[in-house]
Length: 182
Length: 182
DNA sequence: GACAAAGCGGAACAGTGCTCCGTATCGTTC
DNA sequence: GAACGATACGGAGCACTGTTCCGCTTTGTC
Image (tube, rainbow over all chains, first blue to last red):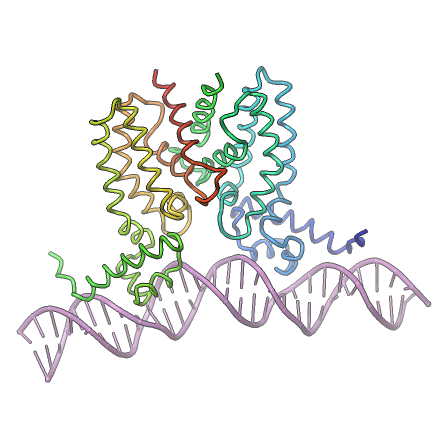
């Protein structure tokens, strides 16, 4: 079994999570490591020890919300008027999550840095949920991966541009999906 | 009137365009300036003098293709079975263009660096074309800006992932748009 | 050929990711 | 509570990139 963690390490990890959450809001998930370290009052080495890649830190910061989104799937399925309505509602939650985190949608699709594991985490955790909603809706024309990635992509960009509303486009996408169903 | 350019300046500009085109294919539109300079055999200062921002260089390299895409709009409108078919065909051209340029779709949406003017160029040149296609198709539920940006966003990402096919999603989007028409 | 203007090259600076190792702190044992 | 090995910390340092700036070179003209 793994040895118990040292008290200062546990403390630092909490401090870091709080600091990162703060900085992510202020400067986005791409904020310089140094900025997060400064906010937490620790050295950069400490961040890298606890969270070897940036994705690990992002995952840790947003884990609760991802879990909530995951568990909302089955719940919506049982409380909505129809499976497709549940899908719509779930997508809405997913979009809520993405658009409120500066640059998270970007990071999710990023082909550089160490964001692959972030991509993988979202997919592993939410993919099956999305899949079961698709299945219940009898939609077989698209895979969860593709739908989630498409939605993620549509959420990319500055969130203060009134000319671009990702929700509207995602709605169109779902409409397109709906007519395939029959 | 502006004084005639020096011969070496003209030569360098051509060399640079060729080198940039080459490097963009190899390393994407985010390739380091130094790499482009090396490929062209010039100093970095020379690049910045000819193309003050990266967007200027990208625009110059792809200008011909953007123009072709712009002029294809009216043409398709006059040769297609229906305005909506013309829209579909035009979107297909637009997607062709985006997916064959590594990272161009990314750059188009980028909120950092000096890519705003790239965004603006695409919008100014292709927005009206897209707009007239939308209008001819009697689609008033969406603005050209929003549609083009959505399409651009859907094209973001590594182009070698067989699980993700932007064209499929864009088709769904257009289907969603089609049912709004009636 | 001489000269001013235009253009060029790349050193230098700043911002960032990431590593590495000397130092500090912790937990345990006596 | 002192000593000591294990664990964790801090931040200097390196690599890489964007961008600027200025001394030097090339060009065109007279």
